[in-house]
Amino acid sequence: MRGLVTKHRSVVLLALPLLLAGCAVSRVALGLGEGGEAGSISILDGKTDQEVAIVDKAGAVANVTGGSASVKTLDSAAFEAKYGDLLSGLPQAPRTFILYFKENSVEPTDESAALLSEIFAEIKRRPGADLEITGHTDTVGAADVNDTFSLRRAAEITSYLFAQGLDKTIVRIAGRGERELKEQTPDETPSAINRRVEVIVR
Amino acid sequence: MRHFLLGVLAAGLFTQPAWADIGRIKSASGNAAIERGGKLLPIRPGFVIETGDTLVTGPRGRAGATFVDNTRLSAGPGTRLTFRVFDYNDTTQSGRFVSVLKKGTVAVMSGRIARNDPQAMRVETPKNIFVLRRARAVLEVK
Image (tube, one colour):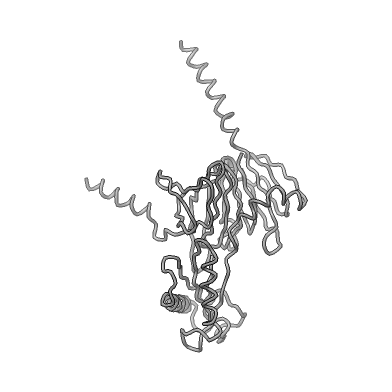
Protein backbone atom coordinates (compact mmCIF):
# COMPACT_ATOMS: atom_id res chain seq x y z
CA MET A 1 0.00 0.00 0.00
CA ARG A 2 2.74 2.40 0.95
CA GLY A 3 4.58 1.58 -2.28
CA LEU A 4 1.50 2.36 -4.30
CA VAL A 5 1.03 5.77 -2.66
CA THR A 6 4.65 6.72 -3.31
CA LYS A 7 4.41 5.61 -6.91
CA HIS A 8 1.21 7.54 -7.41
CA ARG A 9 2.77 10.67 -5.98
CA SER A 10 5.80 10.43 -8.22
CA VAL A 11 3.55 10.22 -11.27
CA VAL A 12 1.87 13.44 -10.14
CA LEU A 13 5.25 15.11 -9.59
CA LEU A 14 6.40 14.09 -13.06
CA ALA A 15 3.19 15.25 -14.72
CA LEU A 16 3.07 18.68 -13.07
CA PRO A 17 6.05 20.29 -14.84
CA LEU A 18 4.81 18.90 -18.16
CA LEU A 19 1.42 20.51 -17.64
CA LEU A 20 3.03 23.83 -16.72
CA ALA A 21 5.43 23.64 -19.66
CA GLY A 22 2.43 23.46 -22.00
CA CYS A 23 1.68 27.11 -21.21
CA ALA A 24 5.15 28.52 -20.84
CA VAL A 25 6.41 29.66 -24.21
CA SER A 26 6.33 33.40 -24.61
CA ARG A 27 6.99 35.28 -27.79
CA VAL A 28 7.75 38.92 -28.40
CA ALA A 29 7.74 40.63 -31.78
CA LEU A 30 9.22 44.13 -31.89
CA GLY A 31 7.75 46.55 -34.40
CA LEU A 32 8.94 49.89 -35.65
CA GLY A 33 7.99 52.67 -33.20
CA GLU A 34 5.77 55.54 -34.28
CA GLY A 35 8.74 57.90 -34.41
CA GLY A 36 10.56 55.40 -36.69
CA GLU A 37 12.83 54.04 -33.93
CA ALA A 38 12.65 50.41 -32.80
CA GLY A 39 13.16 50.90 -29.07
CA SER A 40 14.08 47.78 -27.14
CA ILE A 41 12.79 45.04 -24.88
CA SER A 42 14.84 43.20 -22.30
CA ILE A 43 13.74 39.63 -21.62
CA LEU A 44 14.34 38.20 -18.16
CA ASP A 45 14.08 34.68 -16.81
CA GLY A 46 11.09 34.87 -14.47
CA LYS A 47 12.75 32.60 -11.94
CA THR A 48 16.20 34.20 -11.64
CA ASP A 49 15.50 37.74 -12.89
CA GLN A 50 18.59 37.38 -15.11
CA GLU A 51 18.51 38.87 -18.59
CA VAL A 52 18.15 36.16 -21.24
CA ALA A 53 18.02 38.34 -24.35
CA ILE A 54 17.50 41.85 -25.65
CA VAL A 55 15.54 42.58 -28.80
CA ASP A 56 16.27 46.00 -30.28
CA LYS A 57 15.76 45.72 -34.04
CA ALA A 58 12.44 46.22 -35.80
CA GLY A 59 11.19 42.85 -37.02
CA ALA A 60 12.93 40.86 -34.28
CA VAL A 61 10.91 37.95 -32.93
CA ALA A 62 12.05 36.10 -29.81
CA ASN A 63 10.68 32.81 -28.51
CA VAL A 64 11.53 32.28 -24.88
CA THR A 65 10.83 29.87 -22.10
CA GLY A 66 12.52 30.65 -18.81
CA GLY A 67 16.26 30.80 -19.39
CA SER A 68 16.38 29.88 -23.07
CA ALA A 69 15.64 32.20 -25.97
CA SER A 70 15.85 32.08 -29.74
CA VAL A 71 15.73 35.27 -31.77
CA LYS A 72 15.10 35.65 -35.48
CA THR A 73 14.37 38.68 -37.64
CA LEU A 74 11.49 38.93 -40.09
CA ASP A 75 11.56 41.27 -43.07
CA SER A 76 8.96 44.01 -42.95
CA ALA A 77 6.46 42.24 -45.26
CA ALA A 78 6.52 39.02 -43.22
CA PHE A 79 6.30 40.99 -39.99
CA GLU A 80 3.35 43.00 -41.25
CA ALA A 81 1.53 39.86 -42.42
CA LYS A 82 1.91 38.24 -39.05
CA TYR A 83 1.54 41.09 -36.56
CA GLY A 84 0.18 44.07 -38.55
CA ASP A 85 -3.40 43.23 -37.69
CA LEU A 86 -2.86 43.34 -33.94
CA LEU A 87 -0.65 46.43 -34.05
CA SER A 88 -3.18 48.31 -36.14
CA GLY A 89 -5.78 47.42 -33.50
CA LEU A 90 -4.00 49.72 -31.04
CA PRO A 91 -6.06 52.73 -30.00
CA GLN A 92 -5.26 56.00 -31.81
CA ALA A 93 -2.29 57.98 -30.53
CA PRO A 94 -3.37 60.78 -28.17
CA ARG A 95 -3.65 64.22 -29.76
CA THR A 96 -2.29 67.31 -28.02
CA PHE A 97 -3.69 70.83 -28.29
CA ILE A 98 -1.66 73.72 -26.91
CA LEU A 99 -3.43 76.71 -25.44
CA TYR A 100 -1.67 80.02 -24.75
CA PHE A 101 -2.78 82.76 -22.39
CA LYS A 102 -2.91 86.51 -22.31
CA GLU A 103 -0.15 88.01 -20.15
CA ASN A 104 -0.80 87.44 -16.42
CA SER A 105 -4.19 86.01 -17.17
CA VAL A 106 -6.03 82.71 -17.32
CA GLU A 107 -7.92 83.87 -20.38
CA PRO A 108 -6.78 82.08 -23.57
CA THR A 109 -5.47 84.18 -26.46
CA ASP A 110 -7.87 84.63 -29.39
CA GLU A 111 -6.03 81.97 -31.42
CA SER A 112 -6.25 79.51 -28.52
CA ALA A 113 -9.92 80.24 -27.86
CA ALA A 114 -10.54 79.33 -31.51
CA LEU A 115 -9.03 75.87 -30.85
CA LEU A 116 -11.75 74.96 -28.36
CA SER A 117 -14.27 73.85 -30.96
CA GLU A 118 -11.58 71.61 -32.47
CA ILE A 119 -10.98 70.03 -29.07
CA PHE A 120 -14.67 69.26 -28.68
CA ALA A 121 -14.79 67.81 -32.21
CA GLU A 122 -11.80 65.57 -31.43
CA ILE A 123 -13.51 64.27 -28.28
CA LYS A 124 -16.58 63.38 -30.36
CA ARG A 125 -14.44 61.57 -32.93
CA ARG A 126 -12.94 59.21 -30.33
CA PRO A 127 -15.15 56.56 -28.70
CA GLY A 128 -14.59 56.55 -24.93
CA ALA A 129 -12.38 59.67 -25.09
CA ASP A 130 -10.71 61.07 -21.98
CA LEU A 131 -8.69 64.22 -21.42
CA GLU A 132 -5.58 65.27 -19.63
CA ILE A 133 -5.30 69.00 -19.01
CA THR A 134 -1.74 69.86 -18.04
CA GLY A 135 -0.39 73.24 -17.03
CA HIS A 136 3.17 74.45 -17.73
CA THR A 137 5.03 77.57 -16.61
CA ASP A 138 8.12 79.43 -17.74
CA THR A 139 11.26 79.44 -15.56
CA VAL A 140 10.39 82.61 -13.65
CA GLY A 141 10.04 81.82 -9.94
CA ALA A 142 10.91 78.81 -7.78
CA ALA A 143 10.37 75.34 -9.24
CA ASP A 144 8.00 74.18 -6.46
CA VAL A 145 5.94 77.37 -6.70
CA ASN A 146 5.68 76.77 -10.43
CA ASP A 147 4.38 73.23 -9.78
CA THR A 148 1.48 74.73 -7.84
CA PHE A 149 1.01 77.57 -10.29
CA SER A 150 0.89 75.26 -13.33
CA LEU A 151 -1.71 73.06 -11.63
CA ARG A 152 -3.78 76.18 -10.85
CA ARG A 153 -3.62 77.29 -14.48
CA ALA A 154 -4.71 73.80 -15.58
CA ALA A 155 -7.59 73.88 -13.06
CA GLU A 156 -8.66 77.30 -14.30
CA ILE A 157 -8.76 76.30 -17.96
CA THR A 158 -10.58 73.13 -16.90
CA SER A 159 -13.39 75.05 -15.21
CA TYR A 160 -13.52 77.29 -18.28
CA LEU A 161 -13.95 74.14 -20.45
CA PHE A 162 -16.59 72.77 -18.07
CA ALA A 163 -18.51 76.02 -18.56
CA GLN A 164 -18.30 75.36 -22.32
CA GLY A 165 -19.97 71.98 -21.78
CA LEU A 166 -17.04 69.59 -21.31
CA ASP A 167 -17.98 66.26 -19.63
CA LYS A 168 -16.59 66.42 -16.06
CA THR A 169 -16.17 62.65 -15.76
CA ILE A 170 -13.50 62.35 -18.45
CA VAL A 171 -10.93 64.87 -17.20
CA ARG A 172 -7.69 64.50 -15.29
CA ILE A 173 -5.63 67.59 -14.47
CA ALA A 174 -1.92 67.89 -13.86
CA GLY A 175 0.71 70.56 -13.27
CA ARG A 176 4.17 69.99 -14.78
CA GLY A 177 5.69 73.22 -13.49
CA GLU A 178 8.82 74.14 -15.47
CA ARG A 179 9.85 70.54 -16.26
CA GLU A 180 8.83 70.49 -19.90
CA LEU A 181 9.84 73.72 -21.56
CA LYS A 182 8.59 74.23 -25.10
CA GLU A 183 11.38 76.73 -25.66
CA GLN A 184 14.67 76.04 -23.82
CA THR A 185 15.59 79.07 -21.70
CA PRO A 186 17.89 79.79 -18.76
CA ASP A 187 16.30 80.00 -15.30
CA GLU A 188 14.25 83.14 -14.49
CA THR A 189 13.39 83.82 -18.12
CA PRO A 190 9.87 84.97 -19.04
CA SER A 191 8.49 83.05 -22.03
CA ALA A 192 5.02 83.26 -23.54
CA ILE A 193 5.71 79.96 -25.36
CA ASN A 194 6.42 78.10 -22.14
CA ARG A 195 3.38 79.50 -20.26
CA ARG A 196 0.79 77.17 -21.66
CA VAL A 197 -1.80 74.49 -21.03
CA GLU A 198 -1.81 71.28 -23.03
CA VAL A 199 -5.08 69.51 -23.60
CA ILE A 200 -4.38 65.90 -24.48
CA VAL A 201 -7.28 63.99 -25.99
CA ARG A 202 -6.90 60.22 -25.60
CA MET B 1 -14.74 42.54 17.04
CA ARG B 2 -12.62 45.65 16.87
CA HIS B 3 -9.97 43.77 14.91
CA PHE B 4 -12.59 42.50 12.56
CA LEU B 5 -13.80 46.06 11.89
CA LEU B 6 -10.25 47.31 11.41
CA GLY B 7 -9.69 44.51 8.93
CA VAL B 8 -12.80 45.49 6.99
CA LEU B 9 -11.69 49.14 6.94
CA ALA B 10 -8.17 48.23 5.78
CA ALA B 11 -9.55 45.95 3.07
CA GLY B 12 -11.73 48.84 1.88
CA LEU B 13 -8.73 51.15 1.70
CA PHE B 14 -6.61 48.71 -0.25
CA THR B 15 -9.26 47.75 -2.75
CA GLN B 16 -10.06 51.40 -3.48
CA PRO B 17 -6.84 53.30 -4.12
CA ALA B 18 -6.99 57.10 -4.16
CA TRP B 19 -6.53 57.31 -7.95
CA ALA B 20 -8.79 54.55 -9.15
CA ASP B 21 -8.78 55.65 -12.79
CA ILE B 22 -5.67 54.24 -14.55
CA GLY B 23 -7.00 54.02 -18.08
CA ARG B 24 -10.01 53.57 -20.31
CA ILE B 25 -11.29 51.00 -22.76
CA LYS B 26 -11.30 52.47 -26.27
CA SER B 27 -12.65 49.53 -28.24
CA ALA B 28 -14.24 46.16 -27.53
CA SER B 29 -15.72 43.49 -29.78
CA GLY B 30 -16.75 39.86 -29.54
CA ASN B 31 -16.54 38.56 -25.99
CA ALA B 32 -14.51 40.99 -23.92
CA ALA B 33 -14.82 41.87 -20.25
CA ILE B 34 -13.01 43.17 -17.20
CA GLU B 35 -12.75 40.80 -14.27
CA ARG B 36 -12.82 42.75 -10.99
CA GLY B 37 -13.21 41.23 -7.53
CA GLY B 38 -14.32 37.90 -8.99
CA LYS B 39 -17.02 39.48 -11.18
CA LEU B 40 -17.02 39.81 -14.96
CA LEU B 41 -18.03 43.33 -15.99
CA PRO B 42 -19.12 44.04 -19.57
CA ILE B 43 -16.97 46.70 -21.27
CA ARG B 44 -17.49 49.34 -23.91
CA PRO B 45 -15.53 52.45 -24.95
CA GLY B 46 -15.11 54.75 -21.96
CA PHE B 47 -15.10 51.97 -19.35
CA VAL B 48 -12.73 53.00 -16.53
CA ILE B 49 -9.91 50.53 -15.77
CA GLU B 50 -8.57 50.20 -12.22
CA THR B 51 -5.42 48.65 -10.77
CA GLY B 52 -5.93 44.92 -10.23
CA ASP B 53 -8.39 44.55 -13.12
CA THR B 54 -8.00 41.65 -15.54
CA LEU B 55 -8.88 42.11 -19.20
CA VAL B 56 -10.42 38.89 -20.51
CA THR B 57 -11.28 38.13 -24.13
CA GLY B 58 -13.07 35.09 -25.55
CA PRO B 59 -12.27 33.14 -28.74
CA ARG B 60 -13.46 36.05 -30.94
CA GLY B 61 -12.94 38.84 -28.45
CA ARG B 62 -10.76 41.93 -28.90
CA ALA B 63 -10.27 45.03 -26.79
CA GLY B 64 -8.14 48.17 -26.86
CA ALA B 65 -7.25 50.51 -24.00
CA THR B 66 -5.29 53.71 -23.41
CA PHE B 67 -3.77 54.43 -20.00
CA VAL B 68 -3.27 57.77 -18.23
CA ASP B 69 0.48 57.73 -19.04
CA ASN B 70 -0.42 57.30 -22.77
CA THR B 71 0.48 53.59 -22.85
CA ARG B 72 -1.80 51.93 -25.40
CA LEU B 73 -2.60 48.26 -25.79
CA SER B 74 -4.79 45.97 -27.76
CA ALA B 75 -5.67 42.41 -26.75
CA GLY B 76 -6.39 39.67 -29.27
CA PRO B 77 -8.68 36.65 -28.80
CA GLY B 78 -8.24 34.24 -25.88
CA THR B 79 -6.34 36.68 -23.71
CA ARG B 80 -6.02 37.09 -19.97
CA LEU B 81 -4.10 40.22 -18.94
CA THR B 82 -3.98 41.61 -15.39
CA PHE B 83 -2.93 45.19 -14.58
CA ARG B 84 -1.20 44.29 -11.34
CA VAL B 85 0.71 47.49 -10.49
CA PHE B 86 0.10 50.96 -11.85
CA ASP B 87 1.81 53.78 -9.97
CA TYR B 88 1.91 57.07 -11.79
CA ASN B 89 2.83 60.62 -10.83
CA ASP B 90 1.12 63.20 -13.07
CA THR B 91 3.71 65.87 -12.27
CA THR B 92 6.91 63.88 -12.94
CA GLN B 93 5.18 61.53 -15.43
CA SER B 94 7.07 58.58 -14.02
CA GLY B 95 5.97 55.49 -12.14
CA ARG B 96 5.65 51.75 -12.53
CA PHE B 97 3.40 49.58 -14.70
CA VAL B 98 3.41 45.81 -14.19
CA SER B 99 1.00 43.59 -16.11
CA VAL B 100 0.64 39.84 -16.08
CA LEU B 101 -0.10 38.10 -19.38
CA LYS B 102 -1.29 34.62 -18.51
CA LYS B 103 -2.35 33.65 -22.01
CA GLY B 104 -3.20 35.16 -25.36
CA THR B 105 -1.81 38.05 -27.38
CA VAL B 106 -1.39 41.72 -26.70
CA ALA B 107 -0.01 44.58 -28.77
CA VAL B 108 1.58 47.36 -26.73
CA MET B 109 2.73 50.88 -27.53
CA SER B 110 4.64 52.04 -24.49
CA GLY B 111 3.93 55.42 -22.89
CA ARG B 112 5.48 57.89 -20.48
CA ILE B 113 6.21 55.39 -17.71
CA ALA B 114 8.53 53.40 -20.01
CA ARG B 115 10.00 56.54 -21.54
CA ASN B 116 10.99 58.03 -18.19
CA ASP B 117 12.38 54.88 -16.55
CA PRO B 118 13.73 51.96 -18.63
CA GLN B 119 12.99 49.51 -15.80
CA ALA B 120 9.45 50.62 -15.01
CA MET B 121 7.25 48.95 -17.64
CA ARG B 122 7.02 45.18 -17.26
CA VAL B 123 4.89 42.40 -18.61
CA GLU B 124 5.18 39.12 -16.76
CA THR B 125 4.39 35.84 -18.49
CA PRO B 126 4.35 32.38 -16.81
CA LYS B 127 8.14 31.93 -17.15
CA ASN B 128 9.53 35.30 -18.22
CA ILE B 129 9.48 39.03 -17.65
CA PHE B 130 9.53 41.50 -20.54
CA VAL B 131 10.91 44.95 -19.75
CA LEU B 132 9.66 47.41 -22.36
CA ARG B 133 11.70 50.49 -23.25
CA ARG B 134 9.88 52.77 -25.66
CA ALA B 135 8.63 49.84 -27.67
CA ARG B 136 5.80 49.02 -30.04
CA ALA B 137 5.51 45.27 -29.83
CA VAL B 138 3.34 42.18 -29.74
CA LEU B 139 3.58 39.78 -26.80
CA GLU B 140 2.17 36.29 -26.93
CA VAL B 141 1.82 33.39 -24.50
CA LYS B 142 1.15 29.92 -25.89
